Each structure stands twice: as C-alpha cells, then as structure tokens.
Image (cartoon, rainbow, N blue to C red; front, side):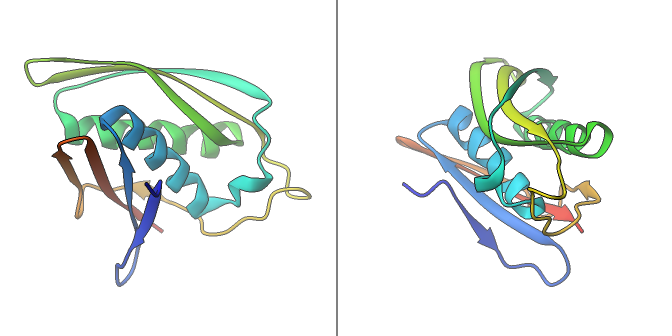
Length: 142
C-alpha cells in the first residue's frame, strides 16, 4: 500500500495518506506534510519528540496532528522523517493520541527546502474508513 499521494489543488497543496487504520494514516500524513516542505530522505531520525493530543472529532484530530508538526518546523526549526502513533483512543466522539516522531534540526546545507507551508486548513479534509484501510486527506495553505 502506498503511504500517500498528492491531491490536485489550484492554489495550495493537498495530499491523501493511507494506512491499515487511522493511526497509520496519521503517521503517513505527517510524512506527507514534511515532504511538502523538505526532502525527508535527507532527514536523519536522530532526536525523538513526544506528541500528545486530544480532539473532539476525527477532523479536529487530523488538523491538530498536522498543526503540531508545523509548530515543530516553524517555531523550533525541527524536521522529521519517522512517525509512530503509540496509542489512539476513541471515547464517544473524542480522540486522544500519544505518539513519537524522530528527526533533526533543519540544516540548510543538508536539507533541500521545497514549499513553505503557512497553515493547515479544513478545506477538502476527508477521513475514510474501509475494511482494513483508512485514508485521510488534507490541504495546506502555501
């Protein structure tokens, strides 16, 4: 199964990420987000960060998940290439995720930059569950 693919958009960048379940689809969505900004094959998984989020629904979870990674990139100059959702709990419509990600400080001598991402959007956001498969779609403002 492919990890993600690009979704056409006239002015921004969209992607659809896949997984066997929502947790794996979130991991691949984070990878796709960083692929918009840098070549993740050049990012070494040297430093681990922990992520804990709670959201009122799946859409808010996807938005907050990706927004957290934008924060790491914009505020801390940290790029990532490996992601692991350790725990994803759903109670009623509320979601809680505990995860880890690995990367390193951005180094312009080693990391080729691609497209600057300004923010996450809810535009064209989709989350689809099928037997044995989940996909999430997001569009980022560039």
